[in-house]
Image 1 (cartoon, rainbow, N blue to C red):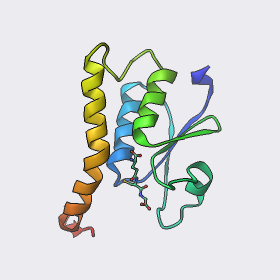
Image 2: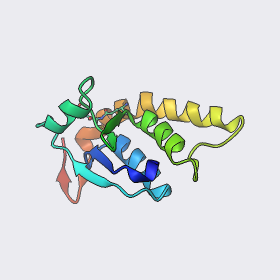
Image 3: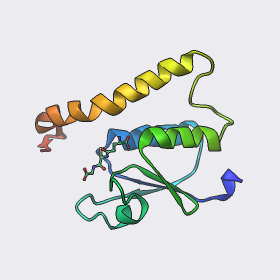
Length: 124
Ligand SMILES: N[C@@H](CCC(=O)N[C@@H](CS)C(=O)NCC(=O)O)C(=O)O
């Protein structure tokens, strides 16, 4: 059933949350179409993530799923063959780390972003 639906991912190249989902899809061998979103023109996002208008958004068939940690849970439940999350008590540690990343990564990136340079070009 899950395999019958087309999978698309709305993302942007510079989002760690998008890479989180791309890694999960890769680890599960799930084929998907990647759609780079211009964050200055959020038309596709307005339709699929109208509340927050953020990437990543995974679109399974016609059903959008947003927020990277929720998308990972959705992947685990929809394609259970290769579970991303551990079993037993280790699942609590994994959830703790996931929540920590959700809460801290964005703040840290914004704190260091002015000094990030890629191939000699500085991104602000
Ligand atoms: N907690 C969210 C964070 C998503 C998020 O902050 N996405 C950023 C890119 S890193 C975004 O879409 N920013 C667009 C904007 O702020 O206009 C998740 O895990 O998906």
